[in-house]
Length: 220
Image (cartoon, rainbow, N blue to C red; front, side, top):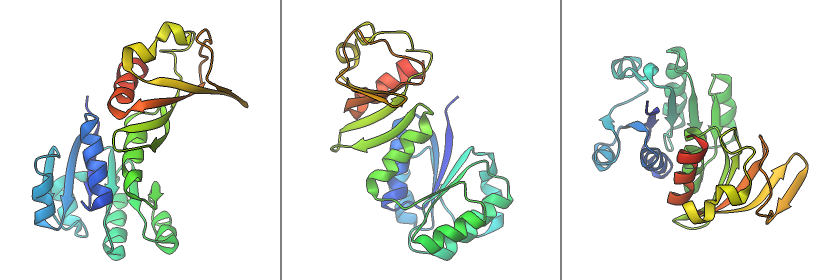
């Protein structure tokens, strides 16, 4: 089954999360009070809705508690962000990630039960989306519009295999440039190095190739 998300607030941060989640195959409901923004994402998101999420009845009517993760990416309106988060929490949403404007805003969000609070730049939206889509992706650094470095935790699908056996460069066009094993860090590991369960692989390549490797090899 596809993972399902709600993104409330379609500014730069929320919009980048919507695009990346959809790109990775998730179902996404995109919500904003601005009809023009909603129209823009009608071609991108699974569903786009003009709605004011500071109203409890609105959230109930949209059935947002049925989604596994709701991202509150409301822009400058701190009050709307707090009210929306509070209502979502009271209705029992499983996971809530909220964009904070400042440290005070974060303190309030944590007090009312936000599961994750972020202070984002644009590329953070992509980073968070990658972490949501796979428990194996530990960190993400955008190098350019299309290339990244990603930390991926080795699971049973690749444990026991050597780098030459996986042959990720030839098959997927990505490079494993480092392996972290406990306190040990191996830079440019030998092709004969066998991956152990829990190793952290440092991979570099095009986003589309890294994501293909994660989906086919890590997630299986």
